[in-house]
Amino acid sequence: MKTKISPEPSVSHFSKRARRYNTSAHWVRDSGLISKITRAAGPPCGALLLDLAVGTGVVAQAFKGRVKTVIGVDICP
Image (cartoon, rainbow, N blue to C red):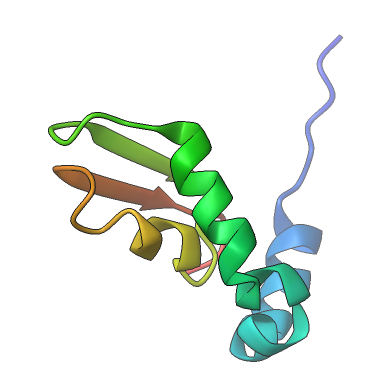
């Protein structure tokens, strides 16, 4: 038996939070952590990077110039 899960509660929650996300989520402003993420991922220059749950794009933006293409996907517009 499959259980259908509605995305609506998540979409509602994150849509309300989106405008203040970069100031309310402390990790987003932690440049040291963002640097560790980019170093740990270590993609080659010509790589295609997929950022799931991209949010405001902070992590995706950190890879700009380090990879060929970044694709960001998120449940909220």
